[in-house]
Image (cartoon, rainbow, N blue to C red; front, side, top):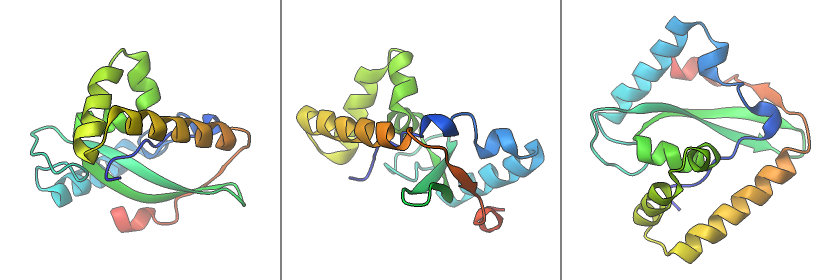
Amino acid sequence: MKLNFELVPDSCWYSNLRSELPQEVWDKIRKKAYARAGGKCMICGAPTSRLEAHEQWEYDDKNGVQRLKNVVAICRPCHEVIHIGRTQLMGREREASEHFMKVNGCTYAEYRKALGEANEKHRERSRREWQLDVSELPKFM
């Protein structure tokens, strides 16, 4: 699927580039992502005047390493899908589910299945502590 949920393990909450880096460094990284996006969401392709920077992580489940993969500029609706747990708490799941189905060209049943799988992966990954690997950071600066 083009748009997926990216549920961060519990032990990694609040550990992100925006909070860990000096503001001027984060600003440089996010502005480069905005420039690469050219005014369009890097996931769904929708033109937008307000992009949001999103860190994409990959997880080495065997070794417990959370590795920075990319920093992309995306629209708010895509960001709300990616962080569906927060979106649900804010009462916006209906809008997020509709966006997920539209972008992925799928049914509500497929949305629910993907969400269930993401929640299961989140539960598994939240059972351990993770080491942060930001060795790829320089390529985004």
